[in-house]
Image (cartoon, rainbow, N blue to C red; front, side):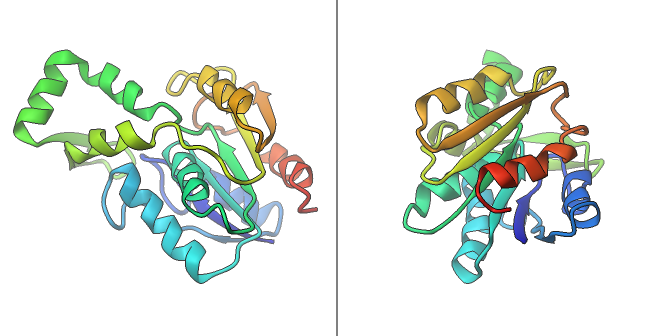
Length: 203
């Protein structure tokens, strides 16, 4: 099985989840650098679209913001035959960042056009343009167009599980929402990947 995996905002292509898919399940996994074109969700979605348009994948998966990019790719390519596995998807990311920045922080961000942000995964400062918020406002709640399994942790303190519940309730394409005892990093999700693949008719 060939998987296209999109890592999260603070993640990397060699993270624990694609590594589990490769080493434990024997799946072939393509893992692009999601910030290749920039940090906003539109740019991250474009990274996936370029690959999806060039190759056939059995499964498109992702974690957090990468999962949101995968969901947006589904919205933008409804004609393709795709299957999605979304791990703690960052639905509602605009509201989450707005809340984190606060009213004064948002005003400063907008007036200056960008703000510095310490990226924990890279352990360095990056610059986030105001386009980060503008694209998030448009792309926080994509309409799924393909069979999808969502796995979300009940202890997620970054993206509320209620956001995935909302999408699951509103979308006819969500095959299952698997709620597990885990946090946002989804360190315990690996054993559910095979279950998700079976639910999607891939095994």
